[in-house]
Amino acid sequence: MCNRSDIHRFAEEARAIGVEYVGLCCGNAANFMRELAEVYGRKPAASKYSPNLQNNIIFGEAGKKGNKENDKIRKFSVGEYSANDLTKLRMGGASKTTALDDHAEAPEHA
Image 1 (cartoon, rainbow, N blue to C red):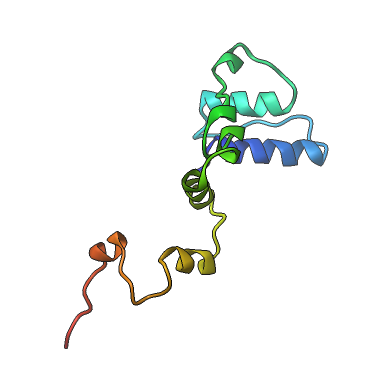
Image 2: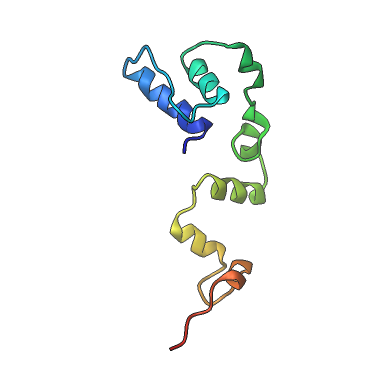
């Protein structure tokens, strides 16, 4: 499964290596074709529906000006935390529990 960002990245890579004719196959959607066209410098009528993510707290500039809590949300959402960072967020180690631990399966006893 691809999303709009995947199609954008694919189109950028194809354009960078000199591909001049590109299309999409089954599973294509209008927003994917619009994304592809925009990477190639076209502005189809549907471009008016392209999202402006500048004000999005996760992907846009607004998120970079946010507070520490917004920064944690953004980093987690886009996968910028390392395993070590995630351990630190648990406040010091495995001995402490979090709300996520309440949903973990109990170990099976023989």
